[in-house]
Structure formats: structure tokens, C-alpha cells
Amino acid sequence: MVGGGADNAIIAARTRFGRPERAPSMLRPMELNGTTAIVSGGASGLGEATVRALAAAGCQVVVADLNEEQGKAVADATGGVFARTDVSDEQSVQAAVDAAATAGLPLRVAVSCAGIGWAARTVGRDGSPHDLASYRKVIDVNLIGTFNLMRLAAAAIARTEAADADGQRGVIINTASVAGIEGQTGQIAYSASKGGIIGMTVPAARDLAAIGVRVNTICPGIIDTPIYGQGPASDEFKARLIAPVVFPKRMGTSAEFAQLVRALIENDYMNAEVIRFDGGIRFQPK
Ligand SMILES: NC(=O)c1ccc[n+]([C@@H]2O[C@H](COP(=O)([O-])OP(=O)(O)OC[C@H]3O[C@@H](n4cnc5c(N)ncnc54)[C@H](O)[C@@H]3O)[C@@H](O)[C@H]2O)c1
Image (cartoon, rainbow, N blue to C red; front, side):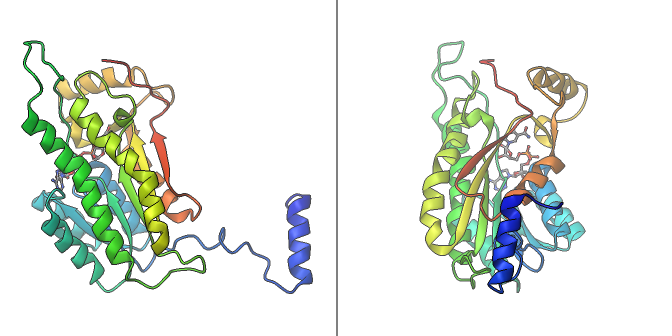
């Protein structure tokens, strides 16, 4: 027998009233094929994997990144477009969004992956307070950069036709970090920037409901990307980072991250959620 009693009852009722035997929302996920997506930080790591996954799903992807050489290479490899972008600069992000909005296919997706790390204590071992310029820089790139892409892309998505009967127009995915929840010693600036992204998730989803745009935030744990550098010292560092991971006992991969991005986009009922993506890790104080 296929399906339970409740399923059978629904099918029987639908058949009786002459309706098609399908649940409208579940069988019609946000369609990626034939749409445009914009991905900040798309030249490397999590962003690059996201660009590749969305392109494989049939999206035309605008790679918005500071890194021209790598960004162009990723765009060329995926049939997309590169837009040199500094996410902390409003005009720069607007130009990238304009490129995405006029690319021919409807803009449906914006994924923020651009980000930088920073390590300094609130008061250093030598007694000096945290440098304010570096704190501002991390907030500018990670938090304001994410807000820039979200607000400017959403305004462009609002001008498209609704994609389905629910009135859905698009999806925003932001990248925070588990450090935005349990920041470690020395992560004050980074954690503040990521905590801000987490905090924007619910009000952004509420604001953008009016235009049919969902918003979800992913909090990665330890994912193997170029952010950790390369070579023996980096390998040793990464081996130490893995220790508190619960299972599987390894770093996550950027392809696994991209798989989650795609799942969140394609599942129409995922909204206003902050999702840990971390193999069960809970960061220790140091
Ligand atoms: N890798 C991890 O373990 C991990 C964990 C938690 C959160 N994250 C977050 O995921 C995101 C991606 O990290 P990643 O590991 O792929 O790093 P990465 O260094 O491989 O990629 C980051 C990309 O962002 C771009 N970028 C930096 N500043 C920019 C700016 N001002 N404007 C436009 N582009 C800019 C870089 O050129 C680079 O291509 C970051 O926000 C990071 O904080 C990563």
C-alpha cells in the first residue's frame, strides 16, 4: 500500500471533487531553472560552491566579488556574469544587482557569502582596547554588506512577476556563523557582525513577505575553504578545529553548504529560519 490513511483520504476527496491529485505547494518548489541568481563572495569557498550548484540547477548566476581574477574564472566556468563588487559600498552592490535584474531571466535569488574574519580581544593582553577601525571594517563588510545585497536585491526581485500561486517572487539566503551565537575569545568584531545577520532574519522575512520573498540564514561551523589558508600550518590549525565536531568528525565541505542553500531555496515553506550547519559543533571559549 502506498501512503497512509490520511493521504488516501485526501486523494479520495480530491478525486471525488475532480481536483488534480497533487499538493500544490509541495510539488511546485521555487523553480531555479531559467532564473537569475546573484551570489556575493562567489569567487571563492562557500560562494563559489553556491554559484556552481545554482548554475547546475539551471540558473544564470551573477558572481559579485572583489576578487576579479577568481570571480571571472568562476563566472566563465559556469556560464554566468562577473560583477566586481565591494559589498560594503552601496553603489557597487546596486550596479551588480542592476546587472542581475537586466540579465534577461527573472532575478529570484540573492545569496550573501562575502565575508572577512578578524581576531582581536576587546582588551588585548597588553592592555590596549580593541582597535575601532578594524571593528568597523568587519561590520561594514559582513553585516552592512549582507544588508546591502538583501535590500537592493529584494527591491529588484519585487519588480518581477510572481512565480507561483502563493505570490512568491524570490528567496534571500544569508551566511552568518555559529560564532554569531557562541563567539570565541577574540571574535568580538566577527561575532557582532554575524549576530547582526542572525538578528535581521526574522524582521527581514516579515518585511519582505509583502513582496513574496523568503529569508533564511545559515550558520556554518567549520567548513573547509580558502579562508583557512593552505599548507602545513593551515592543516595543523584545521586538525585542531575539528576536535569539537560531533559527527562526522571532519570539516564540512563547501559542496555540502551549497546543497543546503539549494534546499532552502527550493523548499517553499522554509522562511525566517536560522539554521546551524556544523556537524553538531559547539564552540568552546577558545
Ligand atoms: N569557512 C568557514 O568555516 C566559515 C564558517 C562560518 C562562516 N563562514 C562565512 O562564510 C562566508 C564565506 O566564507 P568562505 O569560507 O567561503 O571564505 P573565502 O575567503 O573562501 O571567500 C570569501 C569571499 O568573499 C569575498 N569578499 C571579501 N570581502 C568582500 C567585499 N567587501 N565585497 C565583495 N566580496 C568580498 C572574497 O574575495 C572571497 O571571494 C563568510 O561570510 C564567512 O564569514 C565561513
